[in-house]
Length: 98
Length: 291
Image (cartoon, rainbow over all chains, first blue to last red; front, side, top):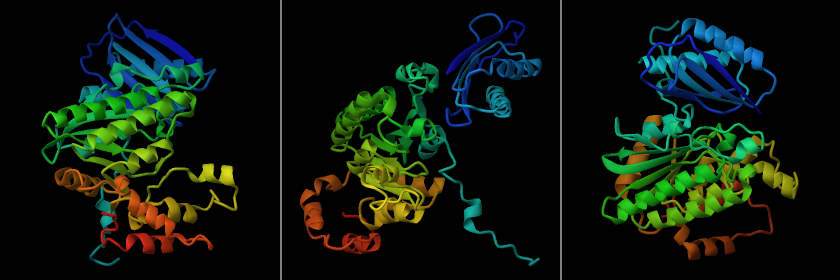
């Protein structure tokens, strides 16, 4: 198990809603996305697979290149692939934009 | 190509099994009445899993939703089978117990509140050992107090099934609803094979497993009350029916003499096969139930 954190200070779009998607089941993950209490966005990941910090960074760099909400994102991951992570993130954004 | 296309009913059937634990709970409550208690954003998760290098879940795999079913107050407690096999730990057990106790409090104050348990679970969470065992004892005690006032309806839809200590919770429920895909048993197939050998039970034999633990057999033997298709509408309508029916005159687990007599009457000199057992036990009731 590994804990990883990232900050995206430039993401300052106003967010009012929160979203919970996914399950901590094999190959899947749980995302809790809510308005940030500080400046910018903050990501906090707990993953069952160690040693993939750079891959997580690439996924979030790509995610925050399209999304600029000041969110606090908490992830509990059970070995989701980068593709699944991005799909779940998009699902969470869909929920808060509904 | 023929002009009229035949569309079998299952194509339009909305699957219950495909829903996650939260959506299952939501689907059984009247539209717009469901309110989640101690949800994921309350972040009451297992403190024990991270200590053992396992990733926790923000709701600990137990979703509690208060609302109405068929217009009557009800609480749905749903176990998420995909997280740690739906296992019961300290937190998920406490959520379940607290929800049942609140329903008992309301019911004894005159507001009859039914509980619907969606059990997809292997039983005690091994990482939380004794706390999980204690939780199961508490859950069962809480069901026993609630069922004096209001019905406790267990739904085992699959595909995890309901095993271990939580099968006892199903056993003391007022009503048990199962699909053909679901399994219900105290010891799971793997456990029986591990403890008693492959001659006793071959855990790779799916036909055998479903013939013994499957929903059709359980309902056929009168150990469960309703066999339903994997359909949101069908499961919701059976749950509504039981909520409206209220608590049964006598719970299955109170029928001690009946079951003692049935077990004493079994001929154990030869291997009993599932079908014979179903014929011997299920014949008493056209519904398949013991009541």
